[in-house]
Length: 402
Ligand code: CTP
Picture (cartoon, rainbow, N blue to C red):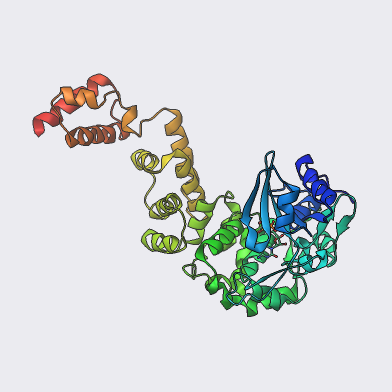
């Protein structure tokens, strides 16, 4: 069994070994290599202390990113490699951070403190794979199972409950089979679920976003609902409208979250999403989907106004959302908007044959310029001719009526 390491990563392992330490790549990068997935980060675990790392990488770009926890980050080519001293963690009384970090000189200690068997494998080019907890077999069979006592693992860090769901949602074995959570692990997740309230909102939302945008979001969210774990996430209770349909949507956070929040109002959703610390741009986009979830969208002008409000791409996303929630007209509306856009129909004032300068020349001032352009746009969207001659004439009439 061989994992092909990028040369920058091999160089880190070799440097630590030449220094006299043990060193391995570990965790997610080993799991994803065996699953033939793209690797996000290469993490290294070593018997070297941070002081020894400093000496080993003297003159190199080594940054103390988490020295208290034994972690230094080495910038090597395009990689930022986290190198961490072997650890056996103490207890986690706040459910988030180990109260004390105990360093070790044994790889086995370091692997034993990790969350799941599939994340507890280490690899070194000369020593091969170290797999004390049958992680490779669990990967082959598509099983998420805690290392050792599951209850203890979730008591140490309740985020692992959501991590288990995220791995279920995103991982597939090499035969394309999705992962299941092993029974004892799932039972421990249920019994520790109240500890989710101890977690920071940012960490919870990051995991949730990972679950929602992955391959098997529907099945995973359904299991979270069944085990009453979804309702432990503040602001997310009763936000499960689109669970069965979510996999039909593109794997994109805002569209899929709008589906989950479909049964509540845009105003309510905004409050809840702000509490979950979604970004303002995400909240705005999700709220726009919900605000237009049930509005009439049949006439040309309604379709063009929608496009002006949310942009063509999001208007098409909205039709997908409406379609999965049973709007029989969504497909027709989509085709109609396609045709309108192909015909070059106007939906923004910038597309008009006249501009603000023309309006100023006719004597409009300040905000009146925007208002008259808006009125002209509405007429053009309703079918009036978008020619300079026609629009100047209509603007003059507006001026006279003022
Ligand atoms: N880990 C853990 N408990 C956690 C978080 C992480 O035991 N609560 C361990 C696991 O061994 C994990 C490794 O630290 O593989 C690295 O964690 P992280 O980078 O957060 O996740 P990955 O497993 O690499 O997965 P992903 O990249 O998909 O987040």
